[in-house]
Length: 555
Image (cartoon, rainbow, N blue to C red; front, side, top):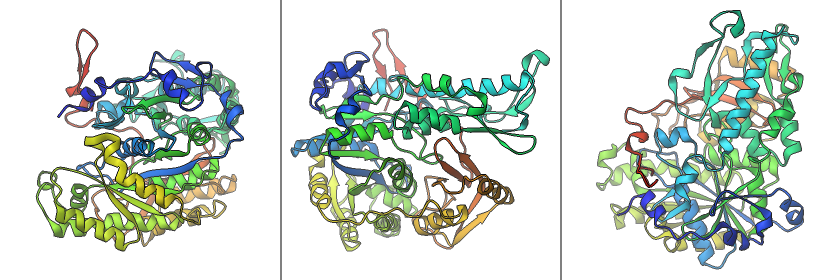
């Protein structure tokens, strides 16, 4: 079997101008990045805005395991399948981040015969959107330290600067550092550090902004520090919102590419799903909904993180209403949730499968809490047995979820038609879409609703620091916003080791941060970090390029 990158390199791509034409776009509507990538001009929106919206399919998954689930692969493959069935489809995905690509993931453009292409470009620098985030973030960081160096007119307390520098690589050594050493000319010494670029609030703003003016307004509201008398300092106070926004003049435009089967795909924006809202840009989704009968899009990690945030944050801000949620799972991953080691997942183990099924059951229940139907896509593996597949199918049906086998990794769109037909039928059923909570509720109550309803927790413990911050944020008027939970992706709980469907646990919120520009609060639980490290053997070790420019090792 060919590797992902070999399959992608053999693809018969169409010029992106031809792909765009399928959506009613002319070459004048595009800003070309070579033959196969383009940004769509913002001027197109005026022509599209009064069209009716298409249907929205949200792809999510169970809590991820070392066995792999294939959420992006299924998003791409199901898009191809729906197109084969005669639907005008647009796929919308997040942009891969270099840190995970060279660290633990090795790439993030789908897999097998269900990929977006040009895969190498998408996984590397693509159109430079993440670099724009990095540059704008670090310009702001430089302005803050420069302001203090030149007299500190605003009275910024160097001990309470909340804005950190970023880079798009996994680098644990930069999590906590000391800045400004080397004498007076080098600024005021203080503690600081780096986050990964996609954790920047500017990435969240890029994904949630409706246009450049909205982006500028959001950037103005960013809180970067507090004064000695505990007043917030914003970008507006520093007078650099215009400069930061101009760095996004191109990045804000949605990126158009294609799948291996030439289905149009927007790949735009990329916040981390365990520390931010974890989905592609509002701009890309809005464009796609006006251009297609069906938008199929994904949210990051399991449905306890990605789907909840997609609905309670993105849909709330963008006015989107999903029609159906796909929950991707595998027999192998369910056995992993049942306690089976990765090396033993190929063996039949019905006891472990039944135990692990509890994780999927909880996600099906959670989708229903939003008034939405769930369709389970069982991502096929050669080791799956008839007995195992039948067990999962029967249990899903008993829970009221439609279910079908997905073979998109091996067969592309043709392998997704069984799931796609289920989706088309379910999408036409009436639904009563709703958010999980009212954003005007007190902060603690919103967090408790998410923890109890979605995670299955008995309650929430708040650290003394979190309690203090919540009181401060309430006084400052930041309490009436959605909450973005920063939690491990591996468990329904805040403890990554608790697999399946844990019970009898509480969630601990150790810190609460305000992302005033993005428009939400971030509740940090467990050991969540905003700058990942590299594993013992990074994916980068498997990558290489030859003298002709041919890349190997991306996956």
